[in-house]
Length: 421
Image (cartoon, rainbow, N blue to C red; front, top):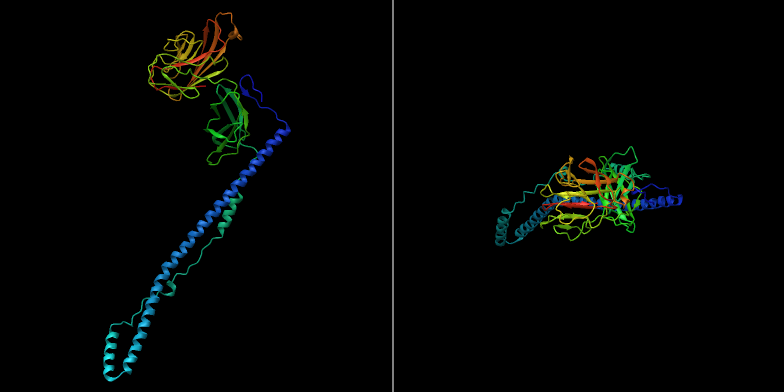
């Protein structure tokens, strides 16, 4: 895939064999997803049915134990009374058959014993209508309900509702833009994933309602794949993935100068944090990596106490000993929104910089080829600075041409953190 001069990856036409391969690969992946999903679903349903059966059997056991135990106790009491009566009858018969003296003594003992035994009372036995009769109540209609849900579960889509529209390279990143291709689909959220082409695993990089996102931490000249899906309005499930698009960036990532007193840098050196060390100087880029025709972006991650000397901008060269970019051969914006060109404050002002603010610089040569002019003379550059949905445009005059520019920042108080890309 060739790269246009503007850094946009164009749509290209593939051969029929390539398209056939993509179709077969997506069909194979879809089969695998369906088989895995329904195997998981079958296992889950079997587990749920087993759990429900165990619960119902436990209910049967509990009812049986609770209702049979009183009847068992009643049966045992009746049997005990019958046995006692039989023993007493045998004892009376023996007493009658004995001699007179012996008979009197045994009859007296029999009479005394019989008077203490209650044979005329029985435990209450429940009526037959009050005795539980267990049965299983099973509604066969659940089969029709489950069948209807299963027969309507899952769909196979031949065309995702969203597709990646273009990939735009940026220093250390790629802007991914996508759009809906299904007019009947109402998107609530989008989900963007990417991976190196050498990796087998996609990872989430953005979830939200915007239709573009810049993926940072992109290694130069390394191919990456991107794909996007959407979630319909009021739905929980995501749509099918778009056709993966491959892109890369040839631009060198922007980096801050390491080892600068007063600033701590991230591992990729694209984030600078103003620390507690006293440092009135400017933090510059490690090299003049900004070229006219590109877009330079600063994103303020956190803010500290503002100061009129604070600045974010570009310059023709590094100047040690300066406490701000509000000087000659530089253009910048202060954290209060003031714009400075060659040290002079412009009348047009932008909104104050706050946490999450994005400040962009777009610079173009007014005269084509002027930046390649090494013979000196005044060079005019047209600068557009945008911040918080507002922008200012002005001309920047330099006394000599610059093939590339440095960028820089200065913050008087700690707490400021800024990302550049």
